[in-house]
Image (cartoon, rainbow, N blue to C red; front, side, top):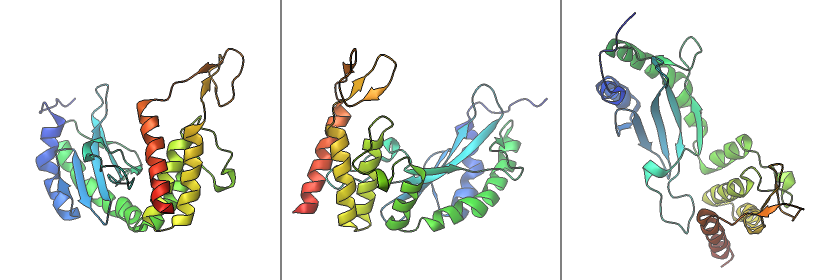
Amino acid sequence: MQTRDYTSFTSAAKPRFRHVAAQLGYEQVSGIVYLKQIDGWYQLFFLQAARHGNDFFYVNYGILVPDLCPVAAPMPLGDCGMLLSDRLRDADETGGFGRETKADIEASAARVLIQYRKYALPWHARLNSWDAIAAEYLRVNPIEEALLGKHTSAFGEDFRAATYGYLLLKANRKADALRWLREAERLLSLPVYDTRDGQVVHALEKFARLRKPTDSEVRDLHQVRETIALIDA
């Protein structure tokens, strides 16, 4: 069995992924984070070392939008989660790339470059406009046009409705954006109760406890209302 010949995966990966970043046109932010700025958004891939002593790493890729809400300050890139994402697969159809030694990381970097060109670049090419990004966001998230006015916030539908509304606004579809932002406003304004059996409801039930809105929920509601006013002005 091989013995790991490095102490930090980030440090070991950095020189071995430098040529990957250069050939793909990405900025090497660190040994594990790689960015490319597009028209209002960023393409990203990052290396995620598997835990529990496993000698492989994942390559996750996706899209960052740091200034999604028009009335909010842009988020720092380090705090901005991926809006849409996927995971690169190795040639053997597994998700992990070897990292047991520096030589393994070097070999994995070569395969990552091949697989990224084969799968991730076409994925990004399909998401080449705000319209395309908005459509993909709606496709992969549990919100539906037919349920406008009927969604609950039990599984984050309030956040997703607002996000989709902001994306539609980026695509200059103001009427559609308004419909979804008003849905987000409705959801964020509803009282939320936790029942004894762990359910989330919006109408008071026996033994249910009213949940106090978090600071982020209060902020989100304020920003949604400001954006609606901005569109209506």
